[in-house]
Length: 110
Image 1: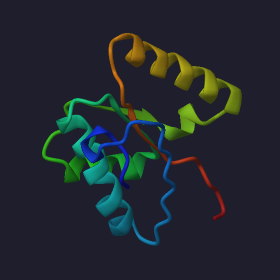
Image 2: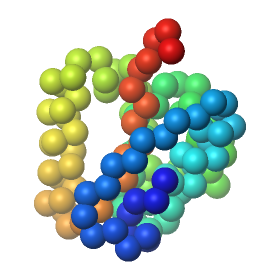
Image 3: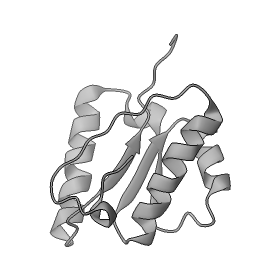
């Protein structure tokens, strides 16, 4: 993934990632989250339990990264949208000009 202040982005950027294996997922997501935390951007990850555990163990530090259980976060679309708007608004009010988010929407049966 290529978004963020570290890459010189000045506007909204939304990438989708497709992966076949947990290792492929980890290779993409861990560096994206670490780059955000290191650059001081508010950084969040809404992941299923097993992916959150993998990411946590792969990172040298999880300081600056907020982990949110995806099953709770994505339970109802309206709740997700409201929670995201409130979260992003508070970061922007605190001076953030970039916010990094990794969200793994539950996809049962896929």
